[in-house]
Image 1 (cartoon, rainbow, N blue to C red):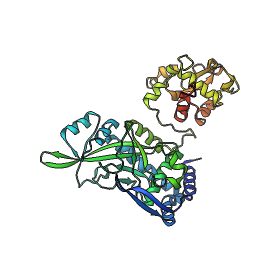
Image 2: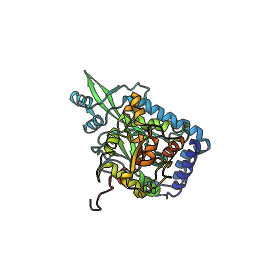
Image 3: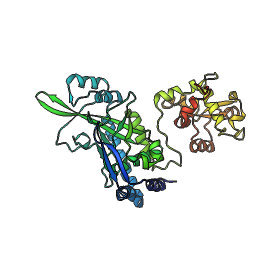
Length: 401
């Protein structure tokens, strides 16, 4: 399925899910201590939906707008601060920035960007609106969310996770669900820019300083199970690093690139890549990470994807000692080229195979058939971690643990 067909399918499924939303009263936050009842009508739901799905008739135009949104966001990430510094700024509980506050933010990896009322750059323009959308005619993709101290639910946990209040109109509510929907069906994190601004006294004059950070939309599975009950729910977001945001943006911008049907992966976090690297997986032991992966593969009826020597035997028909970790790009080839050395033992360069097939491969690359199978079946260890890390980690644990 090419990208145009993919988006048409997503539009159709969204229409179907929205058709199950019922009219009626919804309670949304008006402030931190007060709620407001909003009466939603069938006409409002239909109108809000049409503003999104009308682009189904010209999907190529939507793809152009989609790419423009993330190209613009991609170029803004360089101005973003670290998650730690953004959380420091969030927790100041003040609209004014002292010299010592600014120093603390900068020491934590922050960038304070000055602005004036006359700037044409909307990202650092002091607009009061909480959400800024992409600049296309449709304006249905969230681009920036603004946080002002003292409004709504201000809780930001130690992982950088926070709730962002729902809009007080049906159009905005449905756009929240639409961005979640895209993230789910494209299988890639939907990235936005989170921003705050403070007053800062420079000599005798007050100016404005902006703090920016990339964030991803998370924890939306329950919202998308039933749009009727979740229509007015807030967004859950997490502040992330520039590196993670750039990786997701690159993947989003690669969706319409011809990659011979090979799925494009987001980067694994460095800590996760190190935790599940080849040297960790090859460590023996009943509770080692390598054994957990092998047992998970046996439980889930995974098979040797090579199959030249074993006829694609199921791993459950083998002992764990008869299962090996193969390298997509061999260790010797990685050693021969310096730029590959850091990725030699990366989970995305590893796949599970039987001992016989692994030995027969020697230092050669997997054949074209095996390469395609590994890619299309998401058969690297990195793929398995993206989709099932929690289940893999739980292998070997007792039910009570």
